[in-house]
Image (cartoon, rainbow, N blue to C red; front, side, top):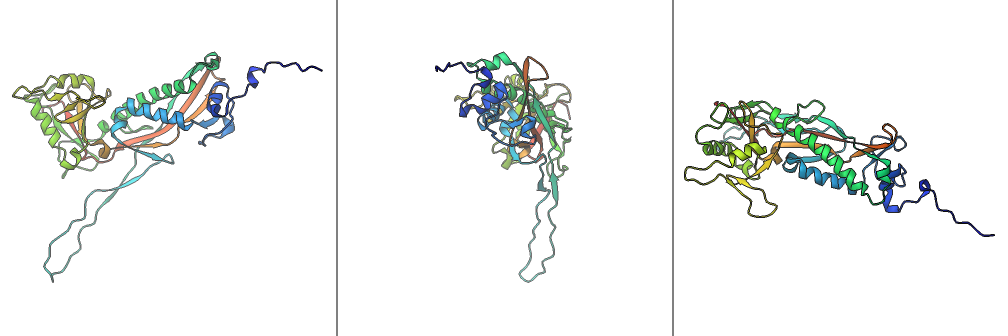
Length: 333
């Protein structure tokens, strides 16, 4: 008896062993669980494979400028706490046989960055997912990274700390110096004019640089948006030398007064009372805490014929060392 070979139905086709995630994205079929998340597997929650998650992280670092210069730590739970000391241990001089009175003890403070759940919910038609020539992983990583980077960029600069990171521009500010300023309060220097830079803007920027103590200036950078940078690029010293210097090598940032300039479009434009320029060592000054995995939920039912991919990630952030970041305020004082 002859055996009739029939083509396999599309729903019964076999995915390759290395295409488990592609199979999940295209058809919802899961051949291999890559990692665990807070959502159970049978409810549809699975972690993004390491390869895709790594691509998301690289794109995030490239698009979100504060992430690229801040201190990023990976946590295993939704909360993160860090102890910091608010002062050193004073010492004293004494004669060989003199009494040694007790010295003051350092004071500890708890640093708790506000955290929130960052999410993206891109969609694609099932027909597009069925297209064998379509790179599902690259599309999904790019969509999620773009959405995450846009939200992160705004939160790390101006987030209010309610179910999201607390941006460094929302911290309390004062003109007091480091030795007299309260913990968590950033120092600002005025620009010299109510709605613009005053006379000798190069000197104002030099004052901003040197208001940061020498240990922090190693690895410091300017942060501003493109409009502010365009204005500063026109500034020159008294002898006609431009303050801004273009990059001399591919991949290296341009410099202002010898320090790299990071463009963050969420920084405010030059306007009255705006904190338009930041200068500091963000590796020491700003802390980003995040969960290591990006969880993804495939939803083919809510918006037929589209398939939605609901991705979430826990991210938090706050100022870690208020002496490591200085601001310039557009004001006379």
